[in-house]
Length: 207
Image 1 (cartoon, rainbow, N blue to C red):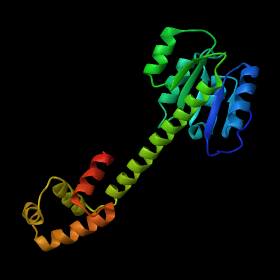
Image 2 (tube, rainbow, N blue to C red):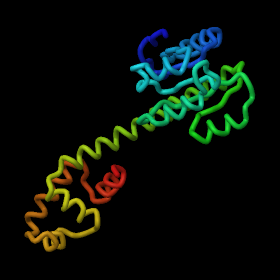
Image 3 (cartoon, rainbow, N blue to C red):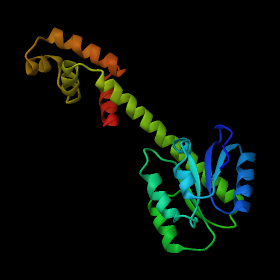
């Protein structure tokens, strides 16, 4: 295995193929296109790589020497926001291509692969992965904000989201409206929102 030279702006791509000529050709193409590339000759090396979570797209040969590419796909799908997958195969295999695409593969390309088609698939895969990971980061941020609330602030939040007014919330919680206003202001500040509509959207997004 050769290490990729750090993440470049185009993206981080892992290649898994036991054909050295294919790997060399793909590495050259992708590096010229601005990608950071790391090659692997088999599934075991890929799955044992500590840097796997950083991969944004995996170009995966269907027929690896140690396992089937579809099995590798299942393992990658089990990861938290794992990389997108572009399959390569030396033979037309409709059942496998259907299975791979249904499981979320970006594309299923036949060797010798057309460079433009491969680059388009990889770009789509990188963008998909980045979008999913950004969504995960945003959701985690919302969860962190929710966890920062006190028990009373959490109660007020639930009532506000349900459309209750300060006076109604005070009655529901057995306190005075002035106290509810204080808790509400602190809760809104911690959540980083100014309007009830924004709060509702944020809470829905964080679920």
